[in-house]
Image 1 (spheres, rainbow, N blue to C red):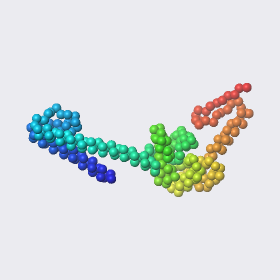
Image 2 (image 1 turned 60 degrees about the vertical axis):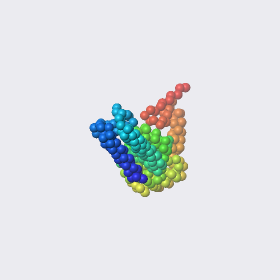
Image 3 (image 1 turned 90 degrees about the vertical axis):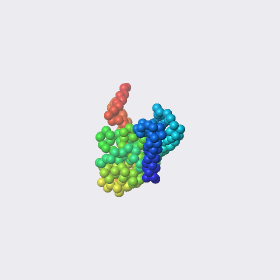
Image 4 (image 1 turned 135 degrees about the vertical axis):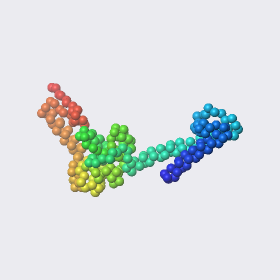
Length: 265
């Protein structure tokens, strides 16, 4: 299909050139003007700009009408060709994104692949950015990926459970992978798939249920985090510290801007 479109485009361009050059030659003979001026007039006629010359003969007037009609039709065809191919290309990119099409992705080595840009994935990426680590985000949500691209992130839109998507993310050359998907079963499958492709990866994962922790460790995840457990322990310890100090440090998503609260009797 692409080859046929290219052939049609070049055929249209060749036909337009034939109309202009042929019209130039005939107009020069009929109207008695030199070839350069005749060519100049033909170009102006075809582009509908209008030439500072009015045909003096009936044959010249007929020729101009034919050249203008044919030329405008061919110019319109070429413009439509460019517009349709542009739209087709954008559509192909959008549809391709569903199966792992590139949104904005640099060719990386020794990078970290962050799978899923949810609440936890967002803070993982923020921390990696602060530590000057190279990372690539993979997420299925087109709107979310578009927003990340506008923020200058390296993103691959697609289903991370698809091996082809992981391969497009250069998992063979990656240093590690962090699984932050919403379901434990998805994170388990992802770790298994990633290990099969690149056994030397450093793997970390999020778990929603405690029974998934041992399973994730057994299949290769060196680090497994239960956000609820970590958050619960941190909250309880902070609460118990109220009896020891009047000053409480708030757990923040931005460590560089920790808040201090002071209590007075």
